[in-house]
Image (cartoon, rainbow, N blue to C red; front, top):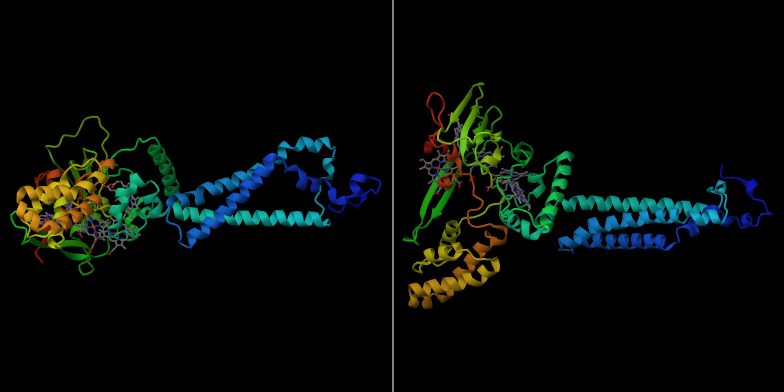
Length: 479
Ligand code: HEC
Ligand code: HEC
Ligand code: HEC
Ligand code: HEC
Ligand code: HEC
C-alpha cells in the first residue's frame, strides 16, 4: 500500500522531487505558522524546565513548595498545552494545503522513503519520550501533592498551626494523607476535589478561623488509624506521670503517677478489657450529641457482646426539636481527637519550664508572671515576639526591682522560653488561642465539656437506674 511506484511519473515535476511529497510538506510547512512555532516553543521550554526542576528536586536541593507546585502542576499543563497547539496550527493552515492543489489521495506515508522513515521514527520516539516524561512527572506530582510537606506548607498561613503541632507529635513521620485520606481511589479523588474547594475558600478568604473541630467529614478511623493500630492489640497498663507546680510552690512539684488500664484484647483471658473495650469488635458504643463540638451527649447506647442493647440518657440535656441529629458510633477519634495536632496548655508549658529549669524557680512570682504574659492576647505573633520578654521584665520590676535586676539574665531566658511556647501554640490570624483545640483523652478539662466524663459522669442513666461509672479504679489505679 505504501509502494505506489505507478505514481512516480517522470513527467510530473511535482513528483519528480519525490522527497517533496504531500507528507513531507505536511511535516515541513504546515505547522510552521506563528501558532505552531509557539506550540513547539512552549513544549520545549516546559519540558526543559520540568526536567531540570525534577532533577533538582530529586537531588534534594529544593526547599520551596511553590517551586515544586510549578514543576509538578503548571509545567506539565504547559507542556500539554504546547503539544495541543501544534495540531491546531496544522488545522488552521489547511487552506494553504488546498490552495497548492495537492491531492489528498497522495497523502501517504512511504516507508521506502528515508525521509518518511526518519519522520515516522522521530514522531514515535518523541511521543514515547513525551509520554515517559508525563508518567514520571505524574508520579512525582502524585507523591508531591500527597506529601505532608505539600499539605503543611503550600497553604502556609492556614495550615501552619496544624503543621507545627503535628511536627512535635508521635505521628510526625506519618503522612497527613494516611489519616486524612487513607487508602482507596474514591477517597483520593474526593480529597482532591475537596482540596480544590479549600483552595477556592482560601482565594476568596472565606474559610473559618479557627478551622472548626471536630472535623465532621473525617474518614472513619477504621479505614485510617486501624491501618497501623488495631484494637485487638493488647496494650495492658500504661504508667503516666503528671507533674505540676502552683504559684505558691514553684520548687516542689505535685507528682501524680497513674497506671492507665488501656487494655485491649487480653490474650490470657480472651476478653476485651479496659479503656479500649469501647472499640472492640463485639462492642458498639454510640452517642447522640446535641452540639457541633460533641461535648453535650444526650444519649449513649451500648451493644454488648452478648447481643443486649442498653441506653443511657442524661435527662437534663434537651434534644432540640426538629433538628437533624445523628447518632455517631464511637471510634478512636472520640477519645484520641488530638492524636497529632497536639496543642499545649499554658500551665503545662510553664510547669515544664520550671521543671526543666528553663524558667528559674528561684525567682519569686515567676510562675504567675509567666502565665500572665503568655496568656495575654496579643494582636499578632510578631507583636507577641516583641513584647513577651519586655512584659515579663516589666512585671518582675513591678514586683521587686532589686530581684528583677539580680535575675535579669534569667528573666530574659525565661522570656525566650515563653516566646517559644507561645509561638508553638498561638496563631491570632487563624483564631487559635490557648484552649481552642482541647483533648478528650482524660478529664482535666471536664468542666469545659471535654474528656471521658462526657459519658462517665454518673448522670447518664439507663432504665434500671444504673449509670456510666466514674469509679476511678475502672480507668486507672496507682502503679
Ligand atoms: C495521625 C493522624 C493524623 C495525621 C498524620 C494528620 N492529621 Fe490532621 N487531623 C487528624 C484528626 C483525627 C483530626 C480531627 C480532630 C478533631 O476532629 O477534633 C485532624 C484535624 C485536622 C485539621 C482541622 C483542624 C484541627 O486541628 O482540628 C487540619 C487543618 C488538619 N488536620 C491538617 C493536617 C495536616 C496539614 C497534616 C500533615 C502535616 C495532618 N493534618 C496530619 C489526624 C491526623
Ligand atoms: C501510617 C501509620 C499510622 C497511622 C495511620 C496512625 N498511626 Fe498512630 N502511631 C503510629 C506510630 C508509628 C506510632 C508510634 C510513634 C512512637 O512510638 O514514637 C503511633 C503512635 C500512636 C499513639 C501513641 C501516641 C503517644 O503520644 O504516645 C496513639 C494514641 C496513636 N498512634 C493513635 C492513632 C490514631 C487515633 C490514629 C488515627 C487518627 C493513628 N494513630 C493513625 C502510626 C500510625
Ligand atoms: C474510650 C476512649 C478511647 C478510645 C475509643 C480509643 N482509645 Fe486509644 N487510648 C485511650 C487512652 C486513655 C489511652 C492512654 C492515654 C495516653 O497514653 O495518654 C490510649 C492509648 C492508646 C495508644 C498508646 C498505647 C501505648 O501503649 O502507649 C494507642 C496506640 C491507641 N490508644 C490507639 C487507639 C486506636 C487505634 C483506637 C481506635 C481503634 C483507640 N485507641 C481508641 C483511650 C481510647
Ligand atoms: C460516648 C460515651 C463514652 C465516652 C466518651 C467514654 N466512655 Fe467509657 N464507657 C462508656 C460506656 C457506655 C461504658 C459501659 C458502661 C457499662 O458497662 O455499664 C464504658 C465503659 C468503660 C470502661 C469499662 C470497660 C470494661 O472493661 O468493661 C472503661 C475502663 C472506660 N469506659 C474508660 C473510658 C475512658 C478512659 C474514657 C475517656 C478517654 C471513656 N471511657 C470515654 C461510654 C463512654
Ligand atoms: C472514665 C475513665 C476515668 C475515670 C472514671 C477517672 N479517670 Fe482519672 N484519668 C483518666 C485518664 C484517661 C487520664 C489520663 C489523661 C491523659 O493521658 O492526659 C486520667 C488522669 C488522671 C489524673 C492525672 C491528671 C492530672 O491532671 O494530674 C488524675 C490525678 C486522675 N485522673 C484522677 C482521677 C480520680 C481521682 C478519679 C475518680 C474520681 C478519676 N481520675 C476517674 C481516666 C479516668
